[in-house]
Length: 184
Image (cartoon, rainbow, N blue to C red; front, side):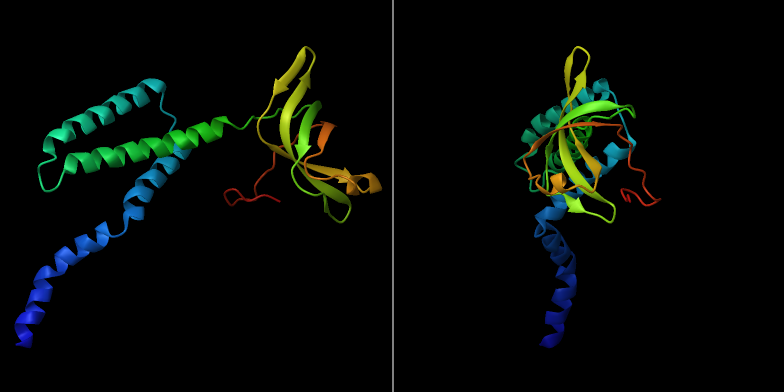
């Protein structure tokens, strides 16, 4: 009696694998989204390519409506994965565009203190969120953050998060030490 039962388990094992795959929806959504974000690091396609890809995705969804009566709709799955890759790419691109690159020149910045001043050995470290850069003909809006190092003074201790600062400094880009996104 036990042998046919064991034999049935081996026959049904491929179905068990597909059931396990369907029970983890995070992988089905997360992997294509992550692939799109990672592709944004390496590829910079133009608007025409993205527009054509969007049209292909929309037409793929429309065509997949005709296959809804089938047990599996492979076209819908492929189109959904392609749209998640495109969404991840667009999310990365929009986030990358929201940070302003600063030139290494003496400038006046208007910013808000993000955190309490952190005492270091010879200075205080201030984390600020940039708002504007003072120009000759007005203010230029900025996005991003800045790390400031101020010499040790008692006036820095009185600063609180949310304080608006006007800072005159020369920004220097943080260099990593060889590992991606690591800085000193």
